[in-house]
Image 1: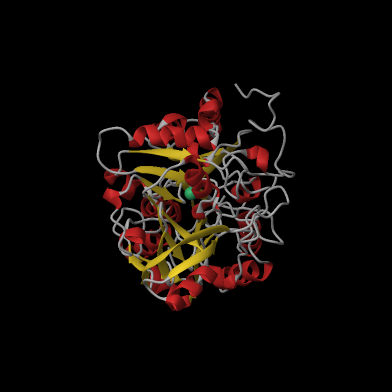
Image 2: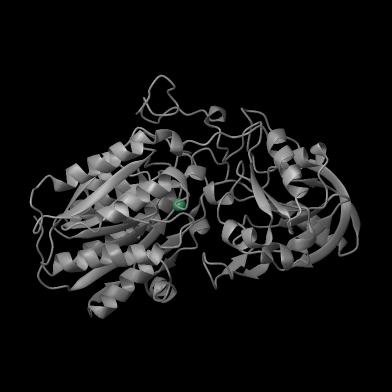
Length: 507
Ligand SMILES: [Zn+2]
């Protein structure tokens, strides 16, 4: 039992990575742009993140705040061992100096080269040097929660939205619980259920279907007396380690609960609700030509605006290199035209076209340079002829609801125009959080028949309002973030698990 009287000193840190163990993109220390000490504090003091929320609560309580690190990387391959150690050490060393609470803003689906359970191993280290210090963790909804993570923390709360717009609220939730725990007002106890379900990211949209119902059930549960938090974790299926997949966490206040196993009871209730709708968490990709046929029919409808083609076989925010050309190639072969597409990350092509300058005609070798292999086979770049229409520095201000106000750094970028497509090519991998990734280079989106985006979810709040509809597109050959598990050599995820094991029916 942990009871603290004074609020004293809090260690607050952010270390976020969603690891796609199949991604060809490496994750060295630089990928995190780590900020240390006071730089981390200044960056996060007013940020709409869980760490930003932790700092606000700490300030209200006049506690001493120590911020060893703020490190965030876009999803990519396993975290380089040196980067993992360097960032973990900074947090552990801060805890070793002594503190009264530890508040961590983690993703929950991190795999490093030397720690498959990235968050679990970090929490274990912290717990070993601070066995009686309360630990609160804010998690992404796509966390792969492990038994070790639960064992070595006191409070764990995840986002309830995808697309994620409640990072700050989640931080306030977890931070408030640890504050009240320190004041002796509550005594949290956690229950956790790992569910034999490998859900698809496209089925974790909290605005529709089974995930919406599950999150609503969790929110209802939180209204019950004694329930402090209820989290539904969709998990992240492209991490090939034992604990990938769905889970639920319920936190109950021992001081006000009528029975000690109430948390277990509610967690079991959420688990059985999820399992009763297991198929609602599974997505089946259509053959690409079926999807493109649907798109062309939609394009013929009288409403205004382009049809969005969402390429979820290569999505930056699930660890995609942002340079596969399958969907563009298929769209051109299918006969679609008047397409805007991108951004494709291809620094070599950008460099070449910057040298040629605006107005130059060129034949380019686009994409397929990241090292991604389709069942061991590499694809050549896509050869296209066209004109360099525009060059920009690629600094884009986000006006949409996710990361609003932040600057998206595409790096030097090009608008390359062929007979059938206007293609944005950037140096950096970027998720299209804002239409400016295309409009800043001069694309008139509303005049386009199709807009092909390497995005499954985050483009939606900003691109949907100007479109007449959307079609989700997966490559017939798979891809680094494909929704078709058949294309991945999954070896380590616990079995049996639905839907990998067709023989099991979790219902
Ligand atoms: Zn997520």
